[in-house]
Length: 372
Image (cartoon, helix red, strand yellow):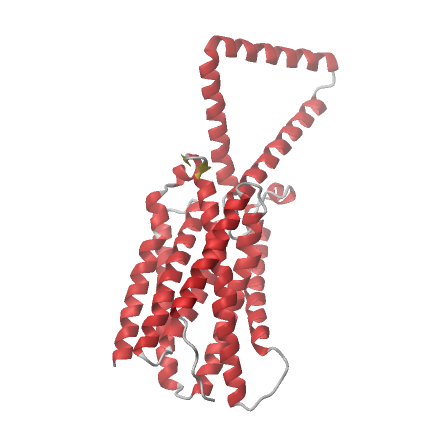
């Protein structure tokens, strides 16, 4: 009974903690501040990018130091109970199937979305929002918007060239434009010119944000992937048999879920999602771990044999590990590290995130005592 009470208390804490921490980015940084504010020498987008790298380090460590060993252990137990001897890496195969599962789901959804909703002109020029990564870095948004502006200028110049055939008239038009611009600058003064330039930059930044912020579809895909992972985290808690094991694992999950919830909130904020939309999405995310705990309790009650528990846990956890692997190495790290800004700071952030999970595993891991 004490074990069940501990699991129920853990469910309540996870629900409240995930929801509260996930909403912190929306409370601290508004959508307008996300585009314009600067803190010291870093813009808010830079800070979010560094935090995303921290989350990438957390994902990296969780994959290889926590999830993969757990899957291999569960599959090994299941095979030993079944008296099956094979050199085929069953655990790694299940993990790979999880990666392929989320890859197929994501690309199918994006293909369907592009074929129906994306503007043909945007798709032709590669400006479609739906073709971008789940977690796109701020730097890649800047590079893409710069490329788009240059393309627009070239297209505009080509239009002028095609519509005007008299070279002398074009030269006179350019001279007249330069003369008017010079007159305006002189009459309005240097300060006004600087203000106008700043306003133009700000306006362009707003347009770029609207055009190139991560799509809500891809954020929802990220929500789905992390929700699946949360179910399996809860499942791990639900199948524990002692109160000490429940709380040992729960503390690590509390911290891990807090980081994931904050990273998810940051990603929602980058899409321009409303606070109500963020709240509803985070409620769904927060409910997944309690659902997993409930499933784990049911599995423990229904499948009393260690063999049955190992099969269920190994298979489900393996699929979740594959989705986590996909997020880490297909979405977070490549796209954050592909931009030249703050490279060393990003690397430091990744190492710090990795180190946090290492510390948690060192503090809370226990030697498995399994007797087949």
